[in-house]
Length: 469
Image 1 (cartoon, helix red, strand yellow):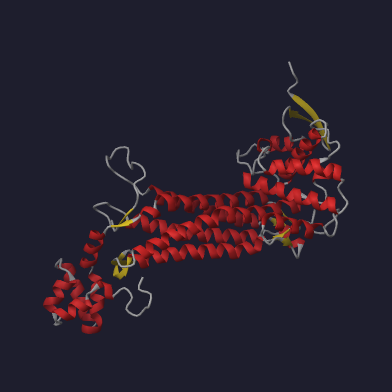
Image 2 (cartoon, helix red, strand yellow; image 1 turned 180 degrees about the vertical axis):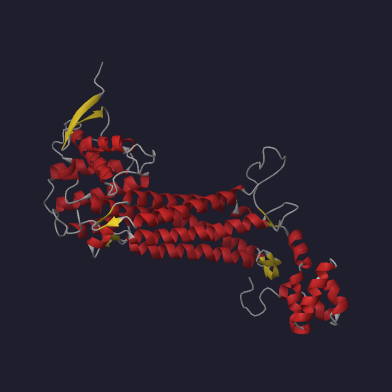
């Protein structure tokens, strides 16, 4: 029977590594130590970690630190990792050493083994390429992992979240334009209020999404500063003084984003304040999207016994017992996504408090929660637009019915008959189940022509504003 394991040594002794696995002893120890959740760093993080290692290897080669004969196969190995070819070998749990050293070593070992196999050596030989001496040259987990968090979040936001939010914004903007002349009743405190247009209501949602994107982009500026070059505690021990600046420049070229070496490595490695700030912007996005989703859910409630001023697409049966029931499942999904993102923000905040002296030791937690929040918001916003917002239609009959029955039309009578008389009309209309228009014809002392003008809902939606939408 073929041997199922190979034996590798590290500074702590021997470890058995399953044959076919490209990680080494350090990774295997972390596998054994941290069987916690089954949650791994996602593809975005591993891809960015590879991009960082590529930049490090290129800079080390240019600085004369890494031999070209070793650099070429190593760079190829890293590029293959970035492309996802070796994802099965990145196996470690998120809940591990707080610096992310285990994941950094997982990468170093896999990359070294891939390159060594390409050079005709064997897995685990550490020859001619060593995971620490060559792959990790000029680096520490303490500057690599925070750099990876910043770059991975920046890339994911630009590739996924901002495009999804922009598509949602455009869809809401189109609805606002299409609904510009549909006058409906407003609501404050969940009670009837004065009229506005459905377009005005949706323009508010569009503005929320636009400002959400702007907040996220502003918060990204805190992530453009990179810790790389600080090595263990921020002093840059065992690396070239030019290394951090040049790696940041390489990453800026590779990604198209304005990354730069941090002005203070001690702050960059000891704290994760920039991540906490960025997480706050994601939390604000969740709060904003939850308001929009909740409103659409309520506005579409019914179809006969709720508000029912809009209809949303029916995407699946709503009940296992009630025939014909259709539920607002897409807005409900968004509300759950937003709740999770808000919870993730608390975890990031607590993670940010995990800095002691020269190192934050909750970085894997921070990385996971930030990247999960970006993923959830991206997918949630995209599906919300595709399967709900895009198909929203007004229920004109219901809108006209509710606005005519609203007691708050009495507000428009105040300049003509005074607040107290208008309030008395509203109370009586409610008690007698009459419309304001019908009762005002009898009691207000105003002419029919005056009432027609004052109680015209279209004149109430923007009486002193140029923007009638």
